[in-house]
Amino acid sequence: MHRLSLLFIALGLLTAVGCSDSASEKRSGSASAASDATSKGSAASPSGSLGSGTSGAATGAAGTAASAPMPGAPTLGASAGTAGSGAAAGASAHAYADADGGVAHDAAEPPPIPSGVLTAGTWDDNLNYQRFAAYRKAHPKSELAGLLPIDDQEFDDAHAAHAQSTTAHTKLDVALVIDTTGSMGDEIAYLQREFIALSSSIHRAYPNAEQRWALVAYRDDGDEYVTRWFDFRTDAAAFNAKLAEQSAGGGGDYPESPDKAFETMNQLGWRKDASVARLAFWVADAPHHDARAAALADALRGAQGSEIHVYPVASSGVDTLTELTMRSAAQLTQGRYLFLTSDSGIGGEHKEPELPCYFVTSLTDAISRMVDVELSGKYHEPSAAQVLRSAGDPQDQACELASGTAQAF
Image (cartoon, rainbow, N blue to C red; front, side):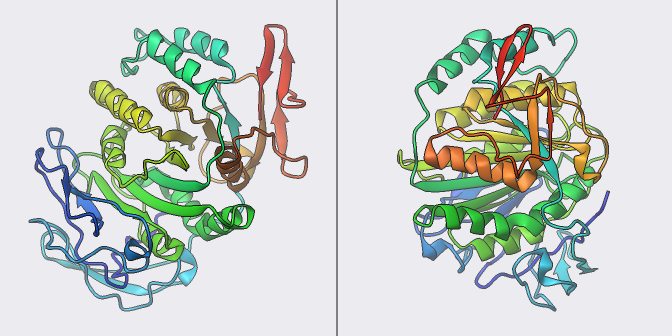
């Protein structure tokens, strides 16, 4: 997989990135300052301190308000080049001091993936709830040791709430929750290339819907960091530059730490009023550790309680547990399941999802459509021009099967 060089870019007034290994530190800062941080953590230490997120230009291009770094935090060095807006800024040399005081120099390279290339399908398990229940029962704990400890009643209650919840929104909070371990290079490169185009397309369709974006990157215990986050900003260019700093690295074993990523995500400065659509796109290719299934389930319940709709994006290499976990997260929180397909010819093999039918579009079109559903409150299938391929012959948002109708959009 492709690896991008890790850039620690000083953005405007961005100051030191804080980190914490203390289980007692949950939030820091004030109502007028947001703090972005890195958590190294361990199996016994949750994510580091998180500043209170605020909306508006004060937390936009100006970046993070000045605050003293936590002990052991990496020190940001001056960039020898220009931060630019995203990965397309081109190759620049950057120096930074690592946590041990050593200085490293990296040369940034533009992502190798052209924009608009990755392909994806989508699925809503709340629109097909009986199929979802049967799918879950087909994969019992005896088969999947890491099965989320969420009982049937919780899923039933989530489905009942979904039937009453399709409403329009006028504002948008989106968090990208990204697995940045070594196998995720292609997906990270794609997001870095596509972000500004995606944000611009949303603005064109909904010019009055104020967008705010946040980022949670995660790896695993023993890696350079466990979670790293950038709280909500209205300035798309500032967010894009922060996204451009991320690269794939670490990992080692197959499971990663999405439980800690969602714990961090829940602490971001989400707007609470009913006019805000709250979405989290979870881009990953590996499951959680079996021993942390309960922690991940609790973090997803936290997202559900805050009405944050989780939209997993299953990448190349996912297994049965990862698909089931992602679909469970989407159903519980009233999101939808997105999955990359092999139509693009990029990356490793993509698991064929356990679904009866779906449309394949570009990933950008799929994400834009999910945002459109959240803002408009109306479901719609992709246009004929957007459909690259279909599986199971869906027509008019449905496919007819011997076992009954399945809803695809």
